Image 1 (spheres, helix red, strand yellow):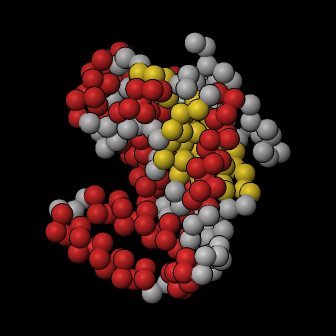
Image 2 (cartoon, rainbow, N blue to C red):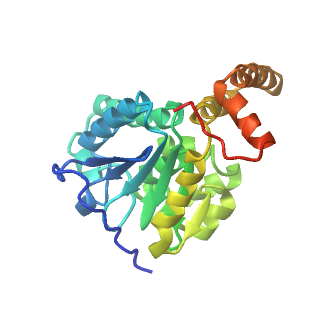
Length: 272
């Protein structure tokens, strides 16, 4: 099935920028904006996206980030034409380090990041889906780590992909370069939800709104704790989690949340 084109309204007067940004009611929407190049990640796109993520991470009014792509697809990976124009190993190391830093930022920034995926997500585009905290895809979306098809193992994409899906499935993706559909991506754990193309934004907004309804103190604390404990053994993870939970218990929002629960009323969060 041919992917539907995602229509993005003009979010800024500078519509030629490779990444667009729109803020509304605690949600920041970042749009990869190279539709003619299938939103491939050029150096300019990576640089601007990094700058925007760094700024959002410091913005206390930003609670949730939605990452999407303009045009027919979400992201087709790195800009191969740009890459082959410079046949230099030092250049490639710098480029992949730049991309890796951006992917790590998605995990380390306090705000949950939701990938809104349509069309295709291939190679570093599939990596980008895996690096986001949550992902919702149109039911006609396809995913692949397709570098193997041109003689290049998707080494950096394998990092986030293998941290989302089981080992055997990850190796199948990486060694064959074959596409999987949204249903398979959901079953394997690469994405959280699927939706008909015409209801993709509605489903993403539903997920974002569910997070916005919670205490931002709890959300930000929880995201940081979650990723750090994954790197620890079980004993250290429980020790760290206990410390974080005790600290979280001292937050004003917890008093408000418990009082609201006991008195059967909506909570009014003071954390933001």
